[in-house]
Image (cartoon, rainbow over all chains, first blue to last red; front, side):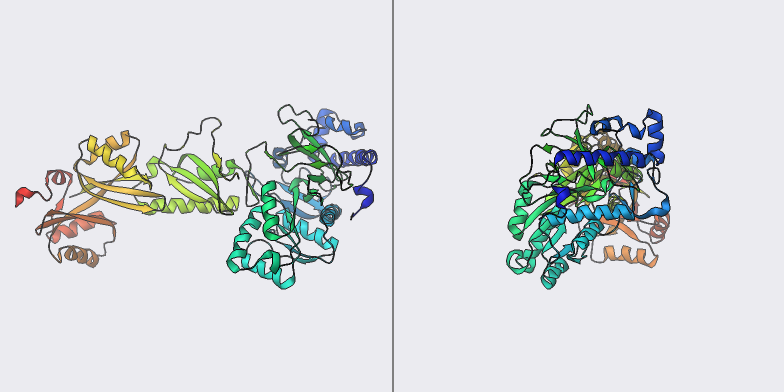
Length: 432
Length: 151
């Protein structure tokens, strides 16, 4: 039932003592990096000052901007030669944030992914179809390594090509899948098209849903259609990727692996900690990462700590499904997109006017991004072909940045809401 | 001679054409010809009017995006083969037509064919050499298309 029983069920007191011990090491390790070295000198923090968990509050928060400003190696706490892998978060403004791992980092990350999968009942007898993009994105390789550690047979299918996915499931008796929620919803219509019933024609039993927030209702729908158990997975590349927090068989919140991370929830305005059960921004600290330790990272994800112990016996605290963001990041088909990215791209295209509007729609089970763009008055020459060319160029430019093909609609100048101050540039119609 | 066509950028949705014709009606602008080209969600309304400058300014005052373009309005015979003669002539001289539309001036006698071409000056010379009449804005405003008094 447990991957590492002693750690997973460790009494809180002992777990917290372990955290303090590891936090000290992590802070000391971090001070080897340019970023934290300079920061600690500036605020006069000696890593030896950290003697309790409360002392973590002596350390300033780290933000995505910090990562970006010290791109690419400012956070490295080991020589470059010790690194074995990099990952990059999808969809960032301007420069992508990059996370580097040593072999030991990959080893620890793999362990928590394996622990998470094992927790839901996946075993070496399982056939695991990984339907996530392999590459810079952490979802593909992170789960791949974890499943390998568990000993399951992995089908590294990657995402897309739905009919082949279904064929693979049937040919090799797939029992577990890892997939983004919007894709598994879309896939259900493909199952119907090809006349395959996942309940009777496949052996699917477990789905890991990650990279995208989804509701309890969506989970119910997925479980009902596929006849399986769907487990919510939370992670972010800055904290390795998947495996940070995961649902147990009780499916009531996600256990944060507190032997690997320190978990805080703060009020994003006052930056003060909030009580358990109260919504706030999730702040995370790596405890075991040596290549690129990150302390008190503001995830911008909104959630709360579920008070009280879990029936599964694990002592690691649980967080609620992610409720939203403190910034304006959008998540579409598992890809993180900031409206500013779209704005920057658009403003570089000759002929684009001053205003634009992003509309997110759900068509059936498919998420769709519509970008309405005002055309510059002076650009208009009366030629439809020229407008078509502009539209195509915008589609291509955006696609190269946000990795998603938006539907671009050109509109008359002055017809969209003005972008003064904090204009509403995103309309999300995907709510259920 | 050169005529002027107004092109108006318009989203492809109900009410956009009505807005244009409404503004022109209030401005007492007479429309000689109109064509619409659409591409999914947006399009272009092309109008040939008796007072292009006046029409442009009132349309722009109402917030519309307008572009004025030089086109050639050729007078052709309104009988079988009338248009073909013009088009064959353009073909022989390698002129590419981007957009075209026509209207009848006097039934079975005269029609006007409006062409938007890639080589404006060359086309004018060719038409002149072939003895084909072209109309400018003034001529277009003077003509009275298809008037019953002509019968």
